[in-house]
Length: 250
Ligand code: FPP
Image 1 (cartoon, rainbow, N blue to C red):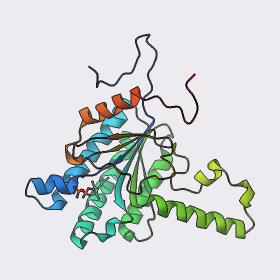
Image 2 (image 1 turned 180 degrees about the horizontal axis):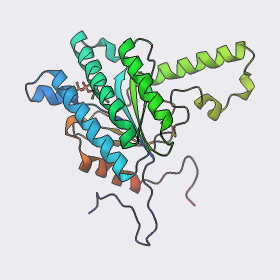
Image 3 (image 1 turned 135 degrees about the vertical axis):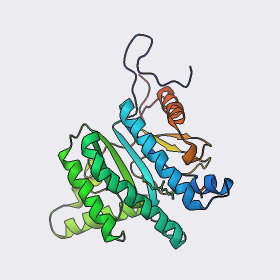
Image 4 (image 1 turned 30 degrees about the vertical axis):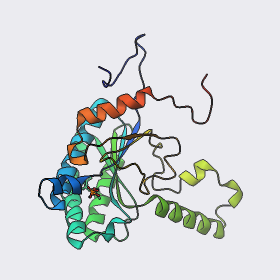
């Protein structure tokens, strides 16, 4: 019973669910290697896990799910592996274009899309247009593609400096909220819970600004093996945390 997600406490009061869950989808390569399969088979299985976990998040009432699909550093991998990940993204994007309106799923990309193929960029624009027609209260999946937390911060700083040079902003007005509005995640609440499977205990350049007060959950399960029960365990752990945001307990 201890790992069940609670929706009500003993007094019948609603217990909070994380509004925004972010996941580093790690362990695809090891999952495949252990089965004697090529690494690309791990990414294929990982993409199916994404579909399954996104559906589950939507069904239990999570509002935002952000996944790390391809980092600014992942270009160092073989051309075969990069090509396989891009092909999977294309497959899921094509599917999303057909189903997101029906299923009320908003889809958004975070990251620098400029080096991404024109075909994938056009598909991402299409999903963005569909997302604009959906309600802000609908479930939203954010896919980080050519994303790096440092790169995102640098792009934001460059744009803010350019706006200052153009006389549209002044350095004095910069605060948390204004800076956040320059990030790829503008309009999206910070993640409440960040999950990293596969036993690695690091952030790997993921949501560096946004994670300031996130709760972290690590598990040894490899991403393709991550299932609904694993997510329940992560949420149950989150529900036991005491979030003080730098304050003291009342
Ligand atoms: C990390 O595991 C995973 C990636 C770099 C790629 C993730 C991409 C997908 C799951 C496919 C497309 C995504 C969507 C949203 C449809 P790893 O390869 O670093 O694993 P390892 O540490 O075991 O080598």
